[in-house]
Length: 73
Image (cartoon, rainbow, N blue to C red; front, side, top):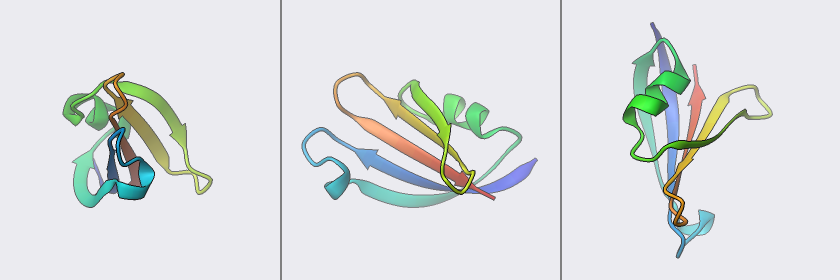
């Protein structure tokens, strides 16, 4: 099991990225994708990697609310 630092950004339709709530979490998981699927309140919309090669997941409710999870080891 690996330990990850996860940067979480909660984005709502009124504030957008500019007013997102941001926090860091430390999580232990075998799979970042599995952790997001088990712990995120919304389903995964997009799964990609950052330019640095870190896993990035975007979840959303289909009404403009998004949560972005960026994992780093």
